[in-house]
Length: 477
Image (cartoon, rainbow, N blue to C red; front, side, top):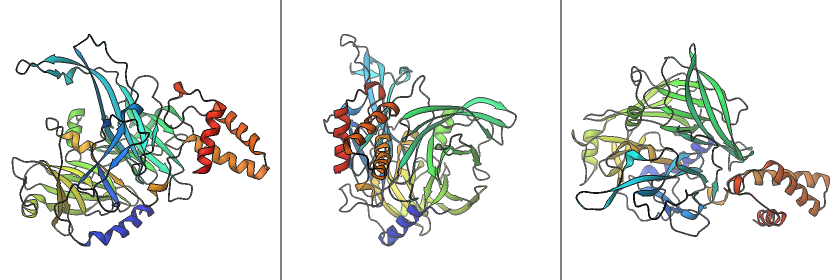
């Protein structure tokens, strides 16, 4: 099934891709590229109300800086307690498929000890606390707009989170979005396993927990949903790179779960440990390109064979579209720097969302764009890998983000915008006076909304004047 937004952007980008890229520069592009490869999303010291987008044309990575005052921090530790350090980090968790991003920030405490060699304090990463403070934002990268989601009550779920949007017109800026997490409960009833979903719907403004969602699986083993969630065809697809993907529509009252297995020969046998699943994500990855769900895998040894599959229209199987050995190809296409070798393994970066024959792979400290149809390297860019000791992290963080033409002038949908739009229609039809209109809207807001522009419900104490100012701003924008 071809998705209209991806197909249109693919056509627009095909002319620009006719000429091969040279080694990419780190300077900002003179125009907005049709997509970006998101990498670092660090918190920065700033009083700005919005995020800053450091945009670069792929295969150069792009970065997003979020002001730290917007992030929900844990109380500082005792300044006299020199054995504890506060750690704050962020990463891009998901993309919506039409330009919106989900950013996650984790604030945790870690013991610190003195190094025997330098005397400097070092973090004991193996001793992090089990109750970190998590802040999630929906972000429009081009405008810098951020919507902070409320916290999830109770124990923090660990599975990957996905972001799905929906437009009433079927295309263009979204009117609503859903953020969802899916976890295997570990319980089963015959061939069916039970799953739990946490979801946040923008039109409701709060988290919901759905338990006991059944899914029929072909093998009696646990599904690992902690790697990645992909938005495609009106559903979120939670990927286990060693087995397959489970999809669901988080907007549904009772989401129906469906499972699709990886291509024959790509499924790992037996029960796979969670740490091995994350490592498998370096060589097996799903994504969306040219409006179809794609699966790519890379052999771990020289000559590093890259295979690309497309999901059939009926969702029952996969079709092999490309298979190419990257070892010699990258050696010939890269001038200087790192080259593929028996000692220098390759890893999958991202799938080009607008050209299904192009995949960005990691070779040492380079990102290399490879066109499997043309059999050539299109371009390469250095990348700062901050996680050399944990090589699977960079492959999990890199996200392909489409940048449609309307993204720079659109707003993130939220419950307040939806309610105000609904009441504008009501008062127009009923010819209600303006003062009554605002009063009705304020009463409805207090009754049904629990978050506004990223502020958690626990901190919500809005007066009528606050709401009127917000409404007036929306009317003038």
